[in-house]
Structures are given as C-alpha cells and as structure tokens.
Image 1: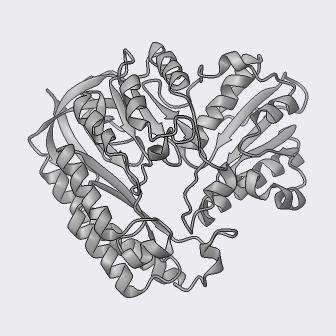
Image 2: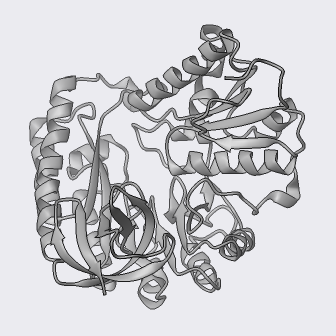
Length: 435
C-alpha cells in the first residue's frame, strides 16, 4: 500500500444497495472524471487515497453492511492508509447527524441529493454538460436508466421517502438524450428504474406518462431490449401493456413488488389495493401480454401478520405462479407508520415464513424451467465464468433472475446476442447450446 501524500489524488467509490444507488455512483464517477480525477469503482487494489462510500439504508441488514463498510475505511484512515473518507447515499441522508457523532473519523457526510456539495468538497465543479453522459460501472451492453427519483406512496413500512424525498420525474427529452448517448457507446439493454415507475409523469405532465416515454425510448437506434423494474400495482397504467405488446424491443418482463397476498395485511401496509384487485390486474397483464414474465417481492412478518394472513399469502404465491420472486423479512424502520405498531412477529417466525415462501417458489421455478427444455431463446451474454458463457433471456434481469449457461467450448462474445436451445434446467439456471 502507498504512504500518504506520495501520489496525486485517486478516488475509489464503493457502492452498497440497489441499482438506483449504482446510478448515483456512476454520476459521481462521471463528474469526477470530467474534473480530471483518477477514479475507480470498488477497486480491489486498495490504492486510492480518497474513498467515497455510497450507502444503503433500506433495511437492517443493508444498514449494518453500510456501517461496517464505513468503519472499515475509517479504520484505514486511522492507520494512515487513506487520506479522506466521505459518505453519501441513503443511510447518510437519514442518519448523518447521529453517524457523525459515532464515527468522527469520516471527513464529511452527504445526503442523496447533495452531489454538487460533494463535488465542491473535493474541489471539483458540477459540469452540467456531463448530465446524460454517464460512465458505466456495469458491462457496457446494459445500463440502468433512472427515470424518476423519490416516492409519493404512503406504504406503512417504507423509509424511502425519508431518504429520497417525493417523486420527481425526469423529462422525456432528457431521458431520450441519455439513452442515445448510451446506445452510441454500445449499450443494448436499458433497465428502467425508479422507486415507482408507474407514477412517472404525474408531476411534470399531469398524467401517468410511462407509455409515451417507452415509445420514445423504443425508437432509439441500437437499443434492443428495454426492461421495466419497480412498478406499483395500485393505479397501474394499462396503456403500458399495449406498448409492451406492440414494440418488439420492450421485454415481456415486469417487476412489480406486491408485498403481500392478504387483503387485511395490504390494508395494514397502506398499499391502496386488495388481493382481489391484485389478482385481476395480474390476469389483465397476462391476457394483454401473453408470455410475460412477472417478478414480485413480498414481506414476511410485518406487524400484525397472523398465521392466517401468512397462509393467505402463501396460497396466493402457489396460485399465481410468479416467474420470479424474492422475500424480505420485515425490518422495523423508525419514522415509518409501521414503527408505531408493535413488532410482534418473532425473528425466527419471520425467517421461517421467508423460507416457506421461497421453498414454494423454488418448486414453481423448477417446474417453469423444466417447461423451457427444448425451446430456443434469444440470449444476451453478460460474462464468462467457470468454464461457461453466462447470459440472460428477455425474461431475466441482471443479478436477480435466472441465467443461461453454455459451455465455453462454444464461443460467443460477451455483450452479444445469440440463440440458445435449452437442453437442461435447474431451479434458477438454464443450460443450453448455441443454435
């Protein structure tokens, strides 16, 4: 490791949490590069003298990971291995006053909307001309496109509005400009993200305008796939389904966190929808877009969740047969409405319910994947690893969904599409050969 002061400044950005945080880190990266900084993202060399930790504050486990990471670099500073440690992101936004007292070694704390102040601290200018010219930390062939920030939903369990503020949409023109810039640099897949995609446009266009945005993005030359993540079921704009069905480069894929399959629990969660209306929406989605892959997320052990409510959710999962599903054990977040309720489901029960749901989903996933054997799919290849080229179909998002593996003896270039015939399948992986 270097000693302090022997080289010009090098910055390492460490990102924790979701893809929305990753986009924020990419924007920091881009601005610092534009100011002439030597910048890395999650460098394994530990040779940077300035570290920026972009934190997550979503649930207990994520908060603990963020604190542990901050402490690691605070200790490195104490040992003289780094000069400066800066912390930004959701955890910092929410708890920076308390954290500054607990971890005084950190040089400065920043909120989620304080990029200009962070840059100023580093004696860098915020360059407006770099907006939309984001440098990627993902492989060049796919990129996350954040279409809005913040959330206006009143969900009882969620602290995101405390960390990200209210919903603010980006304009269609700005997003299309960014999409064109990404396409020119080799991006083939855009993954649309926001706290709530389906609220898009209400603030600036006075209507839900996701369908118009999709049509404009689908016209961008070079973009082969557009994927939707983080849709909200209540008030879902059905015209989005028409665009998804009509435009060939919009993936038949929808990530729509539902949180529960019990009407009574959904009411406690302040989700603004019932199980019956949810089931009607899912039927409409599947009718309008045949073959669509639906991904959802559930919470196990929210305050007041009885065994009967949980069984209703479990039956909902069995009946609906989601293509992809994840479960969080409930985390008791201060300043949320749910925090006013007793956290009355024991930790071991939360974990058991989480395990029970995932066991059901594993069986569903295995069954759905077995049905894919013998079929041929268009696959986008992300990487080579352990004797395999590994990619995804249009029904799978990076890192969280199924992957398609072919033997590295069959050559394919990472970042390219290829047709693959599936000849074997496990619960969460497909195996095939090039056609």
